[in-house]
Image (cartoon, rainbow, N blue to C red; front, side):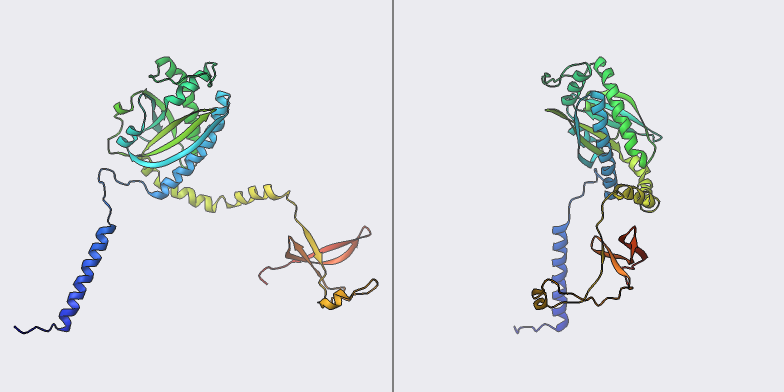
Length: 321
């Protein structure tokens, strides 16, 4: 049987098929599994905006808790991430204290959880005790203790409202408390939420505070995030300029009035003796340069003021010229 010679078209088709198979294999290697039970409903730029809001909240909360508890309180932002409601529940310890927060004017509830490792030290301080003398407590909070804790939750909600004021006016109110996070059924198990984790530290004692914001609230405020950055870039420019100027207006700037002379050879410079006169190729009536921090800014004339040499400012120098 004689060997069959392939035509040029058959050779081209074979190479094209091989290249197509290689591309499909490469795409298959780059593909990532997608979990339809956990859809990414919140854009990354919105998460970044929420991270900025959470940073403002932590700074304000540190001052508020320090004043309320009369102790030095350190508050650090740990993370801002998107989770399903079930995943958020699994992160929370048991027992704990979870406050169900009504966020008006939105028809949805947020969650504010405070770890027991931080609850009992705060209760001890509010009742006149010392954090250093507190031993580790692992039990549910009583109704009386919940009533005392309500004042601390109100301080946290006040700072949360202030942090979100730049996006929308949201009124946060406590609806109720739950000590077992696994029993909460205020959201669907697969509902996406933004989980904000914050560390609170008083002396050697530290604990976590977790905030859960449903995705429906973020979606309803999506246009607000865009408007916020647009307003900040346009309307607040003049205000930012005044604020920066008010901070730097008392700074000292080095000003030099320089009369430029002619070039001098190094050998002539070395041969200079006392009594030698150096001539400048510069007319006496020509404006001299005014430099601020080494940069040419103005021209001026040398004058006499109160029997002292002075500089009379002329027009500023165009840096592009």
